[in-house]
Image 1 (cartoon, rainbow, N blue to C red):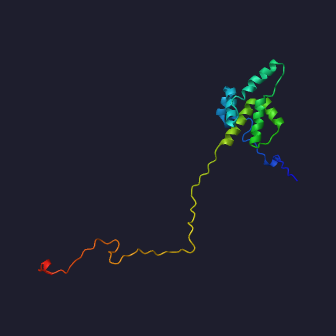
Image 2 (image 1 turned 90 degrees about the horizontal axis):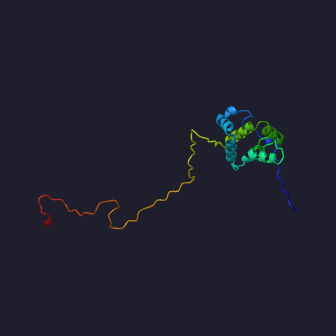
Image 3 (image 1 turned 135 degrees about the horizontal axis):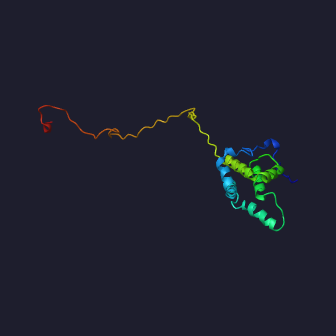
Length: 180
């Protein structure tokens, strides 16, 4: 009998919330000013930080113009919506596609700023510093064994570490050394 494994979707209890609200632009003024003054550049930078192609948001600019040229109206920016859904999915953020459509249609700048803040917050590296290092005891041997080693001795040889062997005779005063 074959076993079928089905991956269950995440439940509501395992979902997280956005790190910042949709209108919390004061938390990251640099990003908000960047988005205000050069929105296409900001969206390209945000998708690059997320790991997607930096040219992807340009479809939000040229896509609706191209669709309107053929008589098809488009009010939902497709890349903004897709990025918002991708950020929610990757970081397990709760919400629905209806909320994402509403955010991208009503306030696209705030939506992109919120995604940028979320990506930056999730990419921060957490460093744990330990002030007092733990000192681990050195393991001791239960039954230490000592092996006594002796240096080999040669009979008639000078002991190890002694100077050269010198033959000395009796000390006599007044007698020449050859007279002994």
